[in-house]
Picture (cartoon, rainbow, N blue to C red):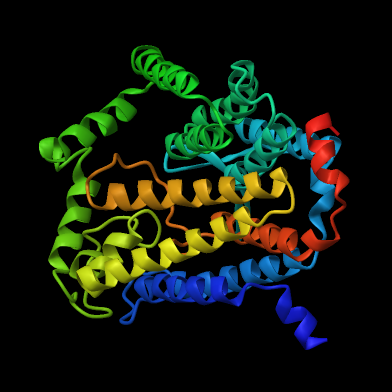
Length: 376
């Protein structure tokens, strides 16, 4: 029985994740409690345990039913409706209505929406693999991404909206689009940015983008967070200041050091060597996901795995980019490391579904591949 259970889990993937989880825990640990300090460490332990429980539970569920169009469309409509409900029942946090607050528990539906978007795009592209070079599929798949993009952008949660766009763009690229259509997507993106800049972006969002071009232009205003973050990363030098001795984070010069800027807090204490080890672990996680994607039983499993990798890579690149001053500050958490339950549960749920697809691949019918081309 134990052998059957262990075969359902890729323990190598778990082995790569655990050090990142521990790094996040000890980076946010307050070793010398002070007045006003929060117990992020204790709360995060509970959230991690719940997330691992979701991961193992999902690994035991046969998710073949997600291939059914009515199921995936229901999930998509459900979470779009939940995002819409935020405008009525949501709680404002850091200027955005992105959360449902249930007392001691908060929930950010955009994190789950990203995973649902990966699923529905995987379903859509797997059914149209033969005719994928038809340009209409760019528009139709773009519509699937546009609705949650707008609902998230208007909260306003600019960071999550970017992730939704990148998930769509990445899955369009891996689906087999032609180079001509790739150029069209690029030009469309440029045009969309121009329209957003002149007619949609709020002044503070324009300020963040301007700060991306010159982060030190306003270090006491829009560039403060980025400036303090780059100081923290640079002060870590080669081997860091040591666990618990990061002055920028421990003395509160670095804001949001448990969430958005946890990489900077980690790099200050563990230095360049620790940061490179962390990046290596992230790279190994992406490698394992792509390995399972390449061994998917059908196009749906392969596209889901690649979409999940795109989802995590987008978070990793944007979060670390804004921590080292190469990207605008967008409020994106670092996977498996930043404080918070919604993103952790979404990440582990995605990995659990991936494990399930690998576990039940051998019992999939040969007709599944044919059904994808026939639109079943």
